Image (tube, rainbow, N blue to C red):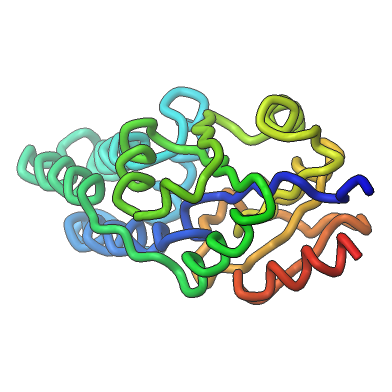
Length: 233
């Protein structure tokens, strides 16, 4: 009997471990540094606009975030931002790049269960060195049959990865907290998409849920083995 699912892909940040809350803490620090030049809401709007503009140049991750903060600081101060503030923003970025990993609930036991019966892989965006560091420090590395760090998540990217590391998208599932990057393109590629909400999700990762029988939402990763069991029944 051919199994319906052989390969389970997982997003990393805010699916396996906390990530966005580190960005939010740094945003609060940024707002404090620039409080004499812009109110917090306006500053965050300008920062988000800069991040959106810069994705094609810097990609995802801490380094692009820091450069966008510096660009925003220059904008709101008419290029008069003190050097001390630039230095503190760079230091904030270095602290983010060394922040300890904090796994989300049920991650280790769920991956351990699924890795015994399926190919479990990670498909994540972000800075290469930072993502490699987080995977190494997570203690989960031995459970992964493959790790893919990509510049963007599209249907074509998922098709390629699931062809190379699995048995094609039709027999693969992608699990993550981003509707835009983890769920919708995986389903467009022909796979299954499982949305696991996180309390903090970056605005640029928001999207409407797909209308597809291959779409599912679960409250946390503890529900994933039972969902896979239902699909395979």
